[in-house]
Image (cartoon, rainbow, N blue to C red; front, side):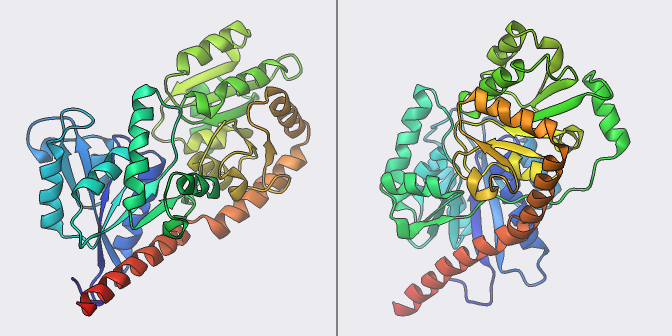
Length: 392
């Protein structure tokens, strides 16, 4: 085992093809670790790809982003979601990399690490919550009941998720809550915002409500559309921009058409760069029925957009009702509509909320704060490893 003078070696297994919330936080952590003059931790990444050919010819958004950042990444080939041929590949990479700590970020990876991890390596499993799944995903999620109690630590993003983990058999002492983080991004230019308005045919003086997120049931877009439909006449200059894609997109579009709002709702699909959309918005709405520590909420806060959100999951841990956002009950389009009207009719309220939210995100949810919290966890585990070796 490595001595105290060497960086802690971490291998992070990331199951993703696009750079979404978990990937953003992991990549920021890796870059911060890499930038330290005396590195405390060194992270290599591992991901899966369903493809053949040479490892260096394999490519997706995550792999390309990692390599462009100058970070190390190993690629495991698979033919389908639970391909048993990945096991010898993982075992070989564990031997070759010999990390002090393995970290995993998805149900499949939790399960595979529980099966294959060498005894001398510690394991940190990251629990990001569960989406509204189909039958197959519900079956996969049951694997976590077997896998996660075997991890040395389970990191999750909010207290309600921690309670769920404990109910599912994970020792509370082994859990840690570390909320997500967000980078402070440069302001979009006036030209960028104007270009975006032109792209989506938005009138110059239209007021914009923005929602960003996967179009799935648990994200509550149907409630937002119902709320917006209720005050079409009261706010003729109001337009709704929904950024994201997913299984509910067609139903959401049909709902907008039935309500006569087709000309006032823009479905942009997935957008890799969303920051300009926040700068376009007069109001950000997060209508979710369930959440963890939503990155999109943090992004709206750092972009200084007034926020209305449902009080679910870790949302009340990120913003305070009446101070940095307006919080409403989930699944209640009437209450959501009332909150939107209150914000639209009171610009001073929106200005106060957005400035308070901006200060809070800078104080509590920076990548540096996230890095320190995770580094302490890794140091805790590495210290226990060193003690165990010395005691033999």
